[in-house]
Image 1: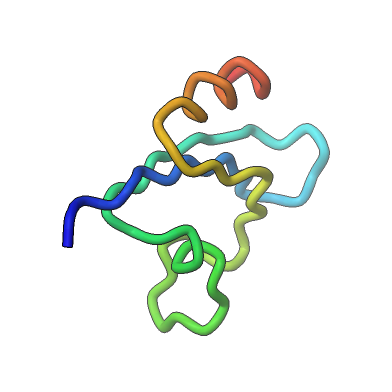
Image 2 (image 1 turned 180 degrees about the vertical axis):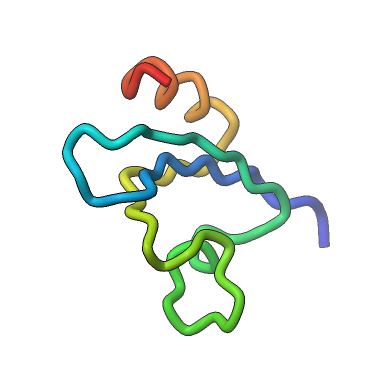
Length: 69
């Protein structure tokens, strides 16, 4: 099996409206693994709020510009 397409995720560490936003690129995972709630060790802690998820490297520049990160 070949390499998987990178998954770009924008998230915050709290539920506040003005919380700082973070962007992270995950390599060699599926997007379903990122949003799964049944994993014993999640890739992002359950307390974090995921704002957007994109599949492909191009989403990194799009989300960085959109969320002013």
